[in-house]
Amino acid sequence: MAFSSSVSNPLYSFTKIVGAIEDPTCLTVNFTKHLPISYDSPLTHSFQLKLTETTDENTKTYYYASPVKECCTALPSQVPLNKDMPYIYKATKRLLDGETDKYVLNFWEEIGNVKTYDTFNHDIETDILDLCQVACNDVISFEIVQEVETFNGVSWDLVARNSIGITNSFQLYCGDDCYKSLIEYYCNENSFDFIYEGGVFNNRQVLPLNLNRPQITSESSNYRKSNGENIKLNETLDETWQLETDWMAYTLHKLLKIALSHDSVKIFSELHKSFNGLAALDNDNPSFICESEYTIEWNEFLTLEAKGKTELKTRFPYYLSNNNCG
Image 1 (tube, rainbow, N blue to C red):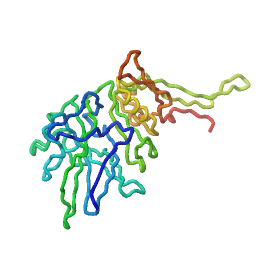
Image 2: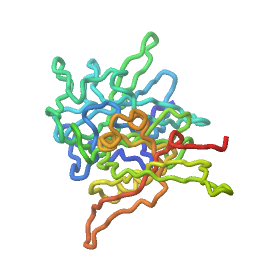
Image 3: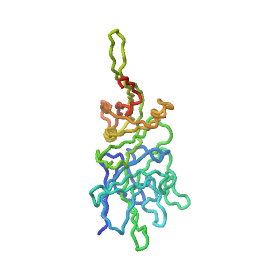
Image 4: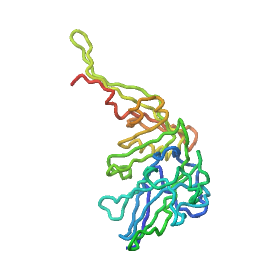
């Protein structure tokens, strides 16, 4: 059985493979439009790829996402096979139900659980990869690297590292930022071209948006007794937040709206935590649903970027209810 493989993106993923690396000694990617990724936490980014692969029982493949900068002198796929390759994410590879050659690759393992290197820094002793001293506000892309192992009758040997392609670019954000929030979202079933079956994957992306201007709304039922006394039957309080983005291209607004349409949406925002103070429940479980229209505020003159806004409702208002009806 001949070995072959190819990968593709879910249609509405923030992270996309934008092409192959044509010049292996100098990465040339358009960095004028890029997404943010947080520098200070390993779990601020996750993405999914679809894999079609034909192999045999004597061949194993593994997939990794490793960061590279523009015009780096070495790429992860070029690391000699006798040295460990540094990477940020190792993919979880899962065969799709009812298929023999179609898989899903989930890039979201924690840094601490896999063999990797310290937050975008190369191994100084072996000089595995020079990332040109990646620092705050630097821009990177991910190279998707495939490792191939074959069985020699006794053990498995690493025989190849292949470059699958390069993703769109990301800017490293550091510290507190009013317009920096992590959005985490998933559905209970396969939706929007993502594979969510089994509950083993959540999309995560840092985006230039914030949550502000919270309001408390309420719905109540009362009745008046014959003597004129008003009696409260029940009241439920809801908490609403205004979501506002920074200037973004239309493509990002579209992807954000699709993300907000998922069954489960969490947004971790420094501004949101500032409003809630030490309210641990609100900070630890910032889940929302979007019931309002998502509005893009285009200027009257021609522009390719605009701000967006919508209203979110806290998903779990049950602790803000009063019911005297038993």
